[in-house]
Image (cartoon, rainbow, N blue to C red; front, side, top):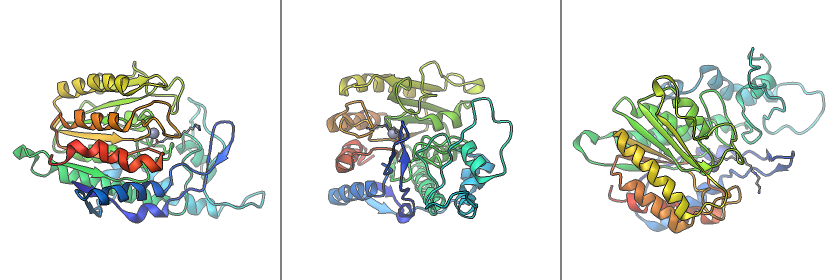
Length: 351
Ligand code: SP5
Ligand code: ZN
């Protein structure tokens, strides 16, 4: 199986994030996640690890807001050259003021004002290399998309794995958050829509709110997310079952919240419903937002899928027999990441 991966992610290593209650902790989304996955892929021997192609900015501008992209590109330099009242060590941009739900009357000129405007939380600080790492990550997803698109007209079903870091599914049209800056899966999906209909299945533990935002009004992309109940879990404000799309996109978004403690059996029951919807949609391509934080021993997750459960999830998805792009999202039990990814991808070999 082809794996698209770039070492450029190493330029992004945010030093901290802020947890609920104001607790400043080391950022959970660390470069080491990739090392652990690569070790497992290399030991397995059935993976070709390839560098991404550069697709330029056009595929990004088709999905993300232009002002937001300009913000991401210049934010760190602007922040570093902003005079501060107090003298303290400044390593990453993170604002402390956010607009109220309907209070976005202006986009402020200052870097801190724009940071609050374009960020949804305190877990996606912008560092010196963040923009470059995010670009490389999106190019991995696009390279995988290009690979699965080839020959699809001849009924040859390719699959590919985009080993993306930073992850993407919390990044909306005009926001970062939740360790995500550019929505890798969404950019790849929009690029694929030039060849046909695409279904996105998001199995990350957290609701794919960014992906939901980007495709909410579109019927040429079916988006489905299975995740922890947002009444009680991040990202809180989207991911509810009554959010089913709007306008032309009405009926083309679905959410499957699960209670804390959900096990393999509960997860697989929701997955069957999601797969049924995907089959009914008759997509030409499938993009999977593959977060491994559904794993029972994930430090940020509270549902309990086993490695064997993850293997079953991969198998059932592979049985759709669609050209499939698997995009790496979350997963923070670094010691288990390699085994979980291998289990998930097992049924996609020879596809
Ligand atoms: C891509 C992805 O998986 N992003 C997830 C971002 C989650 N951020 C919120 C983390 C809340 C952590 N709650 C504290 C649990 C500590 N035991
Ligand atoms: Zn997640």
